[in-house]
Image 1 (cartoon, rainbow, N blue to C red):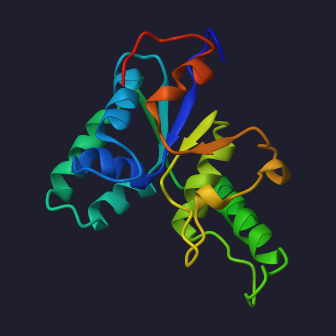
Image 2 (image 1 turned 45 degrees about the vertical axis):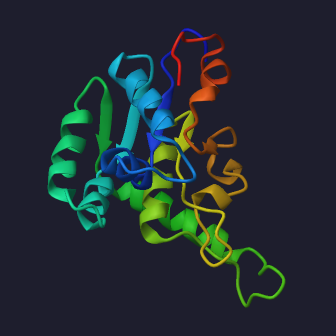
Image 3 (image 1 turned 60 degrees about the vertical axis):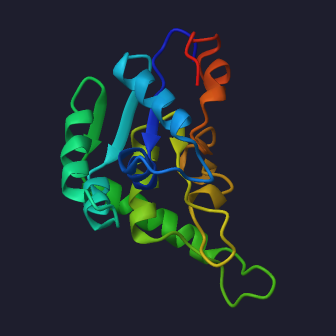
Length: 183
């Protein structure tokens, strides 16, 4: 990755956490600001789906309309790339949902969990845009399967897509060198 701007996908939950400016237990405000600074300073490029705008509006943030406007300002090129929900994205989303639904059911369950439609659209967009890393907090809940629970995307040609929480301490790993940014 050294020498190139990595493509980083932000799931809607990351945008909502960043725009809401409220403390969370899974990611810190500093982690989110660290990555936002990298995008502003053209050290990394941000990618997301148009469905993110809808999810921001549907969130429980008191300032969701203002947040949506801030989201659209932040996503302007060259910093960000907002992708429409196209037929190829829908086809990939279907492929992802179908694949996970067809896996053997885990012990004690009737069927294997699959991704929600918005999660499948986010992941499909990331796969088709060939992003390097996907930031999300969605997963790890025994009652609801999420993007962090996806084990491997080699079946859709994205075996190296890293799905992680957005942590500031990943700069050396992502860029091959210290960016000089402090969390």
